[in-house]
Amino acid sequence: MGKDWWKESAEGIPHLVTNLPGPESKAMHERTSKYMHGLSGQVKLFPVCFDEGYGITLTDVDRNKYLDFSSGIYVTSLGHCHPKISDAIAYWAKRLMNAHDFTTPVKEKLMEKMADVLPGKLNAIQLYSDGTAAVEAGLRAARAISGKHEFISCFRDFHGKTMGAVSCAQMVRGDVLSYGPTRAPGFYMVPRPNPYRPTFSKPDGTIDTDRYIEFYEEFIQEATVGNIAAFVLEPVQGWGGSIFPPDDFFPKLRVLCDKHGILLMDDEVLAGMGRTGEWLTMNHWDVIPDIVTLGKSFGNGFPVTAMVVSEENASALDKISASSSYGGNPMACAAALASIEVIEEEDLLNNATRVGNYFMKRMNEMKGNHPIIGDVKGKGMLLGIELVKDKATKEPFEEAGKLVYQKAFQKGLAWIPAGHILRMSPPIIMDEKYAEMGLQMIEEAITEVEKEFGY
Ligand SMILES: Cc1ncc(COP(=O)(O)O)c(C=O)c1O
Image 1 (cartoon, rainbow, N blue to C red):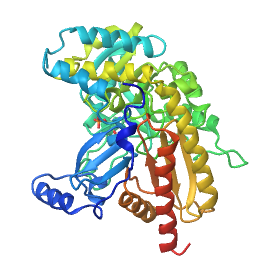
Image 2: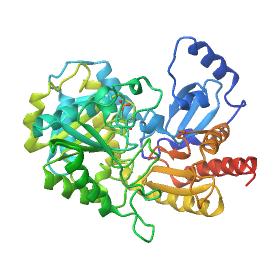
Image 3: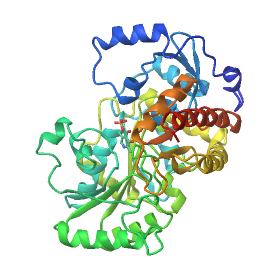
Image 4: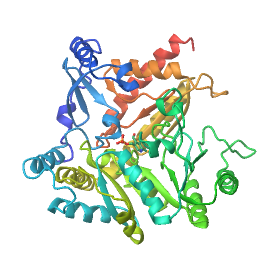
């Protein structure tokens, strides 16, 4: 099996045999929705029912075939059902499914592999089965390491849906947690740099990273009791719309954290393990965090996540009751180990960088040709197109975002909606041919929406 294992199955996509969503999708969704509630906006906007996935191709129950630009939800980054990963999971599914947190041969290999690919001395590890649990463990570890209790996180970052994780993020208005009391005591939020919409800018209008850092200094002094365990943030805002900070932000934040004895907790659940062309997105800036969380791409679809701290803080993990029922089960370890090996064997960090550069070049061209594209952004294959009503006022164009999502889906592109920022997270095995195919579907949808709105 070579690195082109997925190509034959992608021949002829998109292949549509019904209008979308098709009749069987609609009927199945209706039957299931009698019982299944609380669906995401993604499903409500396009209620299709998928039946198979292989490589970059998804097939629905009406046998329509789609090009995948979402990887589940940033999850199956190495392609659906990668044969090596599926075989590794199946082997342990037939041999040993759970042994609580006893060591197993496959866990030993995974631990050694992770210590090898993660930067610095990030090699004290605990495994979980969802990203939120890894984040919660990271918060507990931060308190155990530092002996302090406060946390600072950032506007519009996302870290999960349990009480600690939501205390580090925006409270959704109308959501049950907004009824109050909302954020847990000691959790504070600050703005983070968004180059397209800076809170702090220089006289020439460009973003002023130093001013953010100065503001954090002031904030620590004025708003906290100076007992801050960690600064918790995503390396790139994923759900927030693929928003990367300027290159000098994290190096400067690292200095600030060191000055105040604050741990840097890097939530790479969405951005880590290859998607941006590095094992950790933080590697782009040569910054080594104190605590890292991994998920999504880590097991390429098998629920396995991790919380990692540096070697000198390893003993803190004995103070947080770190283990869980499913964390580190043999199937999970096999999935994560095989995923890392696939990235190495198929040279996928370089592929994500090369194809990501192609995406950015084409997206910049599209920006020049479309009045409603205000900004394009990305690193590797974590990408976004920001839609605005007017390039001068930058007013977000939510209605257009929703319509472009639906129209491109109808052309056979399975992808992710996010308000006015179109987000893309294609499998990083993809080549330029399919990147171009998906972008053309998006561009056609944008052109149609512009016409509808009279541009
Ligand atoms: C940055 C980040 N952290 C944590 C989570 C929570 O992960 P999970 O949905 O696996 O609990 C997510 C999910 O999207 C995420 O994007």
